[in-house]
Amino acid sequence: QSEENLFCSGSQNTRNPQMPLKANFSEQVVESFPSDISTGIYYGWACVGNGDVHKMVLSIGWNPFYKNIKKSVETHIIHTFKEDFYGEILSIVIIGYIRPEKNFDSLEALISAIQEDIEEANRQLDLPEHLKLKDDNFFYLPEGKIVNGH
Picture 1 (cartoon, rainbow, N blue to C red):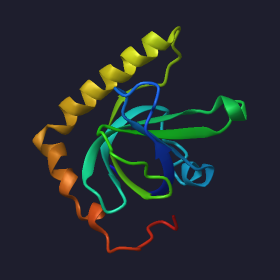
Picture 2 (tube, one colour):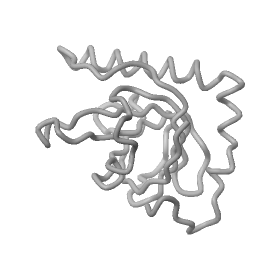
Picture 3 (spheres, rainbow, N blue to C red):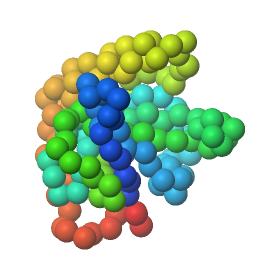
Picture 4 (cartoon, helix red, strand yellow):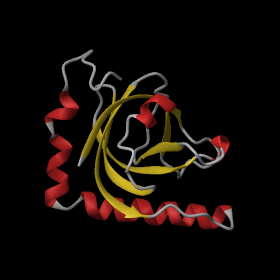
């Protein structure tokens, strides 16, 4: 189990409303992750600001913009938000690993894999041992408290 309290921005995917809300993390935040964390797809819990805790899928991968020498991290929150959350604090708890990072031959294959990842995350997070972490005190920090310098 890993915990971070992160600054991020994100917006609803306007091209495909079936896709979950996506948030990209700053380079500084990505560098604060353990250096030996494997690339791939993870699942866990996420909370935007002081809002509710939702299921999430997290992608940790090599960023082609930086010639694959730096990692990038994206969180896909499995929830429909009514508004943008640009500049809010995103708190996450990574619970488990789904699969390794991989390339896809088509957009359809990527969308299919994302949907399978979401289904697996839903299955895992509904297990009692994972469901109880949704109510962890980590998500209910006093307002304005900074964790790990972020």
